[in-house]
Length: 101
Image (cartoon, rainbow, N blue to C red; front, side, top):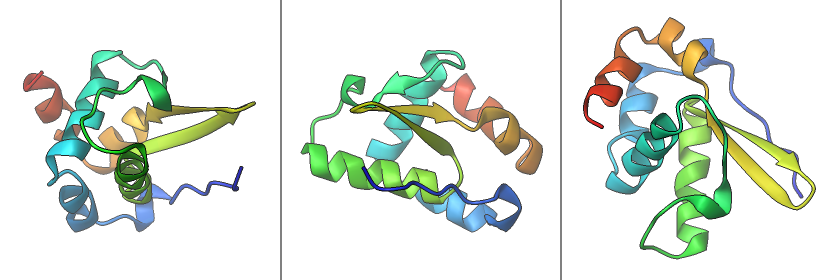
């Protein structure tokens, strides 16, 4: 597997985050992660109606916007929200998303 890098949240702009959240597939992925309340999800356990490759691209956009983190273990990739970091950098954003669950 490729080496995954995660941006430092101080380098991420609000515009990047809002653009990443502006797609229904990506907002759905974030809400699915919010629903597991701080736990990780394996990539293959998300619900989506697009191809796997397209969904992987959407996850990459969320990662590049600093919203999620990947962790590889063997052949599985785990995804989690960068909840505390995002809350600190963009106060109120995660709470707003949680209200809409």
